[in-house]
Length: 286
Picture (cartoon, rainbow, N blue to C red):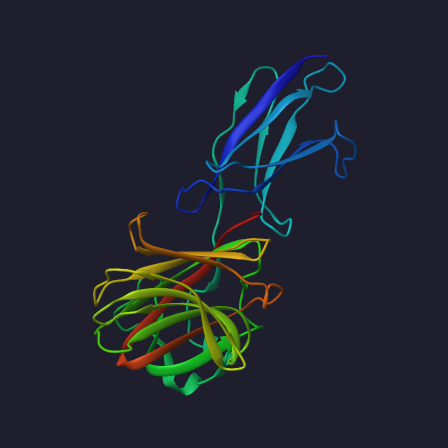
Protein backbone atom coordinates (compact mmCIF):
# COMPACT_ATOMS: atom_id res chain seq x y z
CA UNK A 1 0.00 0.00 0.00
CA UNK A 2 1.54 3.26 -1.09
CA UNK A 3 2.15 6.04 1.38
CA UNK A 4 2.11 9.70 0.31
CA UNK A 5 1.98 13.10 1.95
CA UNK A 6 -0.80 15.65 1.61
CA UNK A 7 0.17 19.13 2.66
CA UNK A 8 -0.91 22.73 2.21
CA UNK A 9 -1.57 26.03 3.93
CA UNK A 10 -4.57 27.79 5.46
CA UNK A 11 -4.73 31.58 5.25
CA UNK A 12 -7.28 34.14 6.38
CA UNK A 13 -9.24 36.52 4.17
CA UNK A 14 -6.27 38.91 4.03
CA UNK A 15 -3.88 36.15 2.97
CA UNK A 16 -2.24 35.85 6.40
CA UNK A 17 -1.31 32.36 7.67
CA UNK A 18 -3.79 30.91 10.18
CA UNK A 19 -2.08 29.45 13.26
CA UNK A 20 -4.00 26.60 14.90
CA UNK A 21 -6.74 26.04 12.31
CA UNK A 22 -8.27 22.55 12.38
CA UNK A 23 -7.63 20.60 9.18
CA UNK A 24 -9.38 17.27 8.43
CA UNK A 25 -8.60 14.60 5.84
CA UNK A 26 -11.36 12.17 4.80
CA UNK A 27 -12.13 9.80 1.96
CA UNK A 28 -14.45 11.76 -0.28
CA UNK A 29 -16.98 8.96 -0.74
CA UNK A 30 -17.66 8.61 3.00
CA UNK A 31 -20.29 10.91 4.48
CA UNK A 32 -19.58 9.76 8.07
CA UNK A 33 -16.01 8.44 8.10
CA UNK A 34 -14.63 6.63 11.13
CA UNK A 35 -11.25 5.20 11.98
CA UNK A 36 -7.73 6.49 11.46
CA UNK A 37 -7.61 5.57 7.78
CA UNK A 38 -10.95 7.26 7.06
CA UNK A 39 -10.48 10.49 8.99
CA UNK A 40 -7.35 12.23 10.18
CA UNK A 41 -7.07 15.61 11.87
CA UNK A 42 -4.24 18.02 12.48
CA UNK A 43 -3.76 21.71 13.19
CA UNK A 44 -1.76 24.28 11.30
CA UNK A 45 1.56 25.58 12.55
CA UNK A 46 2.48 29.24 13.07
CA UNK A 47 2.93 29.63 9.30
CA UNK A 48 -0.50 28.16 8.54
CA UNK A 49 1.01 24.94 7.16
CA UNK A 50 -0.36 21.43 7.65
CA UNK A 51 0.78 17.99 6.55
CA UNK A 52 -0.69 14.50 6.63
CA UNK A 53 2.38 12.28 6.43
CA UNK A 54 2.26 8.84 4.85
CA UNK A 55 -1.50 8.48 4.78
CA UNK A 56 -2.82 5.19 3.36
CA UNK A 57 -4.32 5.19 -0.13
CA UNK A 58 -7.12 2.77 0.72
CA UNK A 59 -7.51 -0.45 -1.23
CA UNK A 60 -4.68 0.16 -3.67
CA UNK A 61 -6.81 1.98 -6.19
CA UNK A 62 -6.66 5.75 -6.70
CA UNK A 63 -8.72 7.28 -3.94
CA UNK A 64 -9.79 10.91 -3.92
CA UNK A 65 -9.25 12.50 -0.52
CA UNK A 66 -11.14 15.44 0.88
CA UNK A 67 -9.30 18.16 2.84
CA UNK A 68 -11.30 20.67 4.89
CA UNK A 69 -10.22 23.62 7.05
CA UNK A 70 -12.37 24.35 10.06
CA UNK A 71 -12.86 27.14 12.52
CA UNK A 72 -12.96 26.62 16.30
CA UNK A 73 -16.54 25.32 16.39
CA UNK A 74 -16.17 22.80 13.58
CA UNK A 75 -17.84 24.78 10.79
CA UNK A 76 -16.25 23.88 7.45
CA UNK A 77 -15.23 27.01 5.58
CA UNK A 78 -13.20 25.63 2.69
CA UNK A 79 -12.64 22.34 0.94
CA UNK A 80 -10.10 21.05 -1.57
CA UNK A 81 -9.27 17.73 -3.15
CA UNK A 82 -6.17 15.76 -3.98
CA UNK A 83 -5.41 12.34 -5.49
CA UNK A 84 -2.53 10.92 -3.44
CA UNK A 85 -0.31 9.57 -6.18
CA UNK A 86 2.57 11.90 -5.39
CA UNK A 87 3.48 14.31 -2.61
CA UNK A 88 1.05 17.15 -3.15
CA UNK A 89 1.08 20.86 -2.37
CA UNK A 90 -2.57 21.86 -2.20
CA UNK A 91 -3.65 25.38 -3.12
CA UNK A 92 -3.92 27.77 -0.20
CA UNK A 93 -7.28 27.57 1.55
CA UNK A 94 -9.07 30.68 2.71
CA UNK A 95 -11.11 31.05 5.91
CA UNK A 96 -13.22 34.21 5.51
CA UNK A 97 -13.66 36.70 8.30
CA UNK A 98 -16.81 36.31 10.37
CA UNK A 99 -18.06 39.84 10.93
CA UNK A 100 -19.32 40.55 14.43
CA UNK A 101 -20.03 44.14 13.57
CA UNK A 102 -19.54 45.64 10.15
CA UNK A 103 -22.03 48.30 11.15
CA UNK A 104 -25.34 48.78 9.40
CA UNK A 105 -28.34 50.81 10.59
CA UNK A 106 -30.29 48.82 13.14
CA UNK A 107 -27.30 47.11 14.78
CA UNK A 108 -27.60 49.37 17.83
CA UNK A 109 -30.90 47.64 18.60
CA UNK A 110 -28.81 44.68 19.77
CA UNK A 111 -26.84 46.72 22.33
CA UNK A 112 -27.61 47.87 25.86
CA UNK A 113 -26.09 50.79 27.73
CA UNK A 114 -25.53 54.33 26.51
CA UNK A 115 -26.87 53.60 23.02
CA UNK A 116 -28.33 57.10 22.62
CA UNK A 117 -24.82 58.54 22.38
CA UNK A 118 -23.87 56.32 19.43
CA UNK A 119 -24.90 56.40 15.78
CA UNK A 120 -24.32 54.29 12.67
CA UNK A 121 -24.20 56.19 9.40
CA UNK A 122 -22.38 56.44 6.08
CA UNK A 123 -20.75 59.78 6.84
CA UNK A 124 -16.97 59.87 6.54
CA UNK A 125 -14.84 58.35 7.96
CA UNK A 126 -15.65 54.73 7.10
CA UNK A 127 -12.89 52.10 7.00
CA UNK A 128 -14.74 49.07 5.57
CA UNK A 129 -18.12 48.73 3.88
CA UNK A 130 -20.66 51.54 3.73
CA UNK A 131 -21.15 52.50 7.39
CA UNK A 132 -19.27 53.00 10.63
CA UNK A 133 -20.25 53.48 14.26
CA UNK A 134 -19.57 56.91 15.74
CA UNK A 135 -19.76 58.48 19.19
CA UNK A 136 -18.73 61.65 20.97
CA UNK A 137 -17.94 60.92 24.63
CA UNK A 138 -20.08 57.81 25.15
CA UNK A 139 -20.23 55.36 28.03
CA UNK A 140 -20.23 51.59 27.55
CA UNK A 141 -22.50 49.76 25.13
CA UNK A 142 -22.57 45.95 25.11
CA UNK A 143 -24.15 43.27 22.92
CA UNK A 144 -24.50 39.63 23.99
CA UNK A 145 -27.04 38.44 21.40
CA UNK A 146 -28.56 39.39 18.07
CA UNK A 147 -25.39 40.10 16.02
CA UNK A 148 -24.04 37.77 13.33
CA UNK A 149 -21.22 36.44 15.51
CA UNK A 150 -19.53 36.86 18.89
CA UNK A 151 -15.97 36.61 20.20
CA UNK A 152 -15.23 33.37 22.05
CA UNK A 153 -12.20 32.07 23.88
CA UNK A 154 -9.96 30.28 21.38
CA UNK A 155 -10.49 32.95 18.72
CA UNK A 156 -8.71 35.98 17.36
CA UNK A 157 -10.64 39.16 16.55
CA UNK A 158 -9.86 42.58 15.11
CA UNK A 159 -11.59 45.94 15.43
CA UNK A 160 -10.76 49.24 13.76
CA UNK A 161 -10.87 52.51 15.70
CA UNK A 162 -10.20 56.18 14.96
CA UNK A 163 -10.38 59.52 16.77
CA UNK A 164 -10.07 63.12 15.61
CA UNK A 165 -8.35 64.84 18.56
CA UNK A 166 -6.15 64.09 21.55
CA UNK A 167 -6.04 65.38 25.10
CA UNK A 168 -5.89 64.41 28.75
CA UNK A 169 -7.70 61.14 29.49
CA UNK A 170 -8.93 60.76 25.92
CA UNK A 171 -9.60 57.03 25.57
CA UNK A 172 -11.05 54.72 22.92
CA UNK A 173 -12.09 51.24 24.15
CA UNK A 174 -13.06 47.93 22.57
CA UNK A 175 -14.82 45.49 24.92
CA UNK A 176 -14.99 41.69 24.76
CA UNK A 177 -15.89 38.80 27.06
CA UNK A 178 -18.69 41.11 28.13
CA UNK A 179 -21.52 40.15 30.47
CA UNK A 180 -23.02 43.64 30.71
CA UNK A 181 -21.89 47.28 30.84
CA UNK A 182 -20.22 46.75 34.24
CA UNK A 183 -18.41 43.47 33.59
CA UNK A 184 -16.05 42.86 30.67
CA UNK A 185 -12.48 42.71 29.34
CA UNK A 186 -11.20 45.73 27.48
CA UNK A 187 -8.37 47.04 25.36
CA UNK A 188 -8.03 50.75 25.00
CA UNK A 189 -5.78 53.47 23.62
CA UNK A 190 -5.22 56.53 25.74
CA UNK A 191 -4.26 59.18 23.22
CA UNK A 192 -2.92 62.13 25.16
CA UNK A 193 0.59 63.45 25.83
CA UNK A 194 1.74 59.95 26.83
CA UNK A 195 -0.25 57.53 24.65
CA UNK A 196 -0.79 54.11 26.22
CA UNK A 197 -2.21 50.79 25.07
CA UNK A 198 -3.91 48.93 27.94
CA UNK A 199 -5.42 45.50 28.47
CA UNK A 200 -7.72 45.29 31.48
CA UNK A 201 -10.70 43.73 33.18
CA UNK A 202 -13.73 45.54 34.63
CA UNK A 203 -15.73 43.91 37.43
CA UNK A 204 -18.84 45.55 38.85
CA UNK A 205 -17.82 48.82 37.19
CA UNK A 206 -14.27 48.83 38.65
CA UNK A 207 -11.41 48.54 36.15
CA UNK A 208 -8.14 46.71 36.82
CA UNK A 209 -5.24 46.98 34.36
CA UNK A 210 -3.57 43.73 33.33
CA UNK A 211 -0.80 45.21 31.15
CA UNK A 212 0.21 48.59 29.67
CA UNK A 213 2.49 49.55 26.78
CA UNK A 214 3.57 52.92 25.46
CA UNK A 215 2.54 53.63 21.88
CA UNK A 216 2.88 56.40 19.31
CA UNK A 217 -0.44 57.25 17.65
CA UNK A 218 -1.97 60.06 15.59
CA UNK A 219 -5.38 61.60 15.11
CA UNK A 220 -7.52 60.98 12.01
CA UNK A 221 -5.92 57.57 11.44
CA UNK A 222 -7.57 54.14 11.52
CA UNK A 223 -5.88 51.72 13.92
CA UNK A 224 -6.73 48.09 14.57
CA UNK A 225 -6.85 46.12 17.80
CA UNK A 226 -5.78 42.50 17.14
CA UNK A 227 -7.00 40.50 20.14
CA UNK A 228 -6.29 36.82 20.77
CA UNK A 229 -8.15 34.86 23.46
CA UNK A 230 -6.20 31.65 24.09
CA UNK A 231 -7.85 28.60 25.64
CA UNK A 232 -5.58 28.82 28.71
CA UNK A 233 -6.97 32.31 29.64
CA UNK A 234 -4.00 34.14 28.11
CA UNK A 235 -5.14 37.30 26.30
CA UNK A 236 -2.88 39.12 23.85
CA UNK A 237 -3.46 42.34 21.93
CA UNK A 238 -1.45 44.09 19.25
CA UNK A 239 -2.23 47.59 18.02
CA UNK A 240 -1.51 48.11 14.33
CA UNK A 241 -2.19 50.85 11.83
CA UNK A 242 -4.69 49.63 9.22
CA UNK A 243 -2.75 48.50 6.18
CA UNK A 244 0.33 47.54 8.17
CA UNK A 245 1.21 44.19 9.76
CA UNK A 246 3.69 45.77 12.20
CA UNK A 247 2.55 46.18 15.80
CA UNK A 248 2.79 49.68 17.24
CA UNK A 249 2.43 48.20 20.71
CA UNK A 250 1.57 44.88 22.37
CA UNK A 251 0.03 43.90 25.70
CA UNK A 252 -0.82 40.55 27.28
CA UNK A 253 -2.20 39.12 30.48
CA UNK A 254 -3.82 36.03 31.94
CA UNK A 255 -7.30 36.24 33.45
CA UNK A 256 -10.18 33.77 33.57
CA UNK A 257 -12.94 35.99 34.95
CA UNK A 258 -14.94 36.00 31.73
CA UNK A 259 -13.42 33.04 29.90
CA UNK A 260 -16.84 31.66 28.91
CA UNK A 261 -18.39 35.02 27.96
CA UNK A 262 -18.65 36.18 24.34
CA UNK A 263 -20.28 39.63 24.45
CA UNK A 264 -18.66 42.61 22.72
CA UNK A 265 -18.90 46.36 23.15
CA UNK A 266 -17.43 49.84 22.84
CA UNK A 267 -16.67 52.79 25.07
CA UNK A 268 -15.25 56.25 24.42
CA UNK A 269 -14.57 59.01 26.90
CA UNK A 270 -13.56 62.53 25.95
CA UNK A 271 -15.43 65.17 23.94
CA UNK A 272 -14.20 64.17 20.50
CA UNK A 273 -15.34 62.01 17.63
CA UNK A 274 -14.53 58.30 17.98
CA UNK A 275 -15.16 55.78 15.18
CA UNK A 276 -15.54 51.99 15.42
CA UNK A 277 -15.62 49.76 12.35
CA UNK A 278 -15.26 46.16 11.15
CA UNK A 279 -15.18 44.22 14.43
CA UNK A 280 -14.74 40.62 13.29
CA UNK A 281 -13.40 37.19 14.20
CA UNK A 282 -10.51 36.29 11.91
CA UNK A 283 -9.20 32.96 13.22
CA UNK A 284 -9.99 30.05 15.50
CA UNK A 285 -8.51 26.90 16.91
CA UNK A 286 -5.69 28.30 19.03
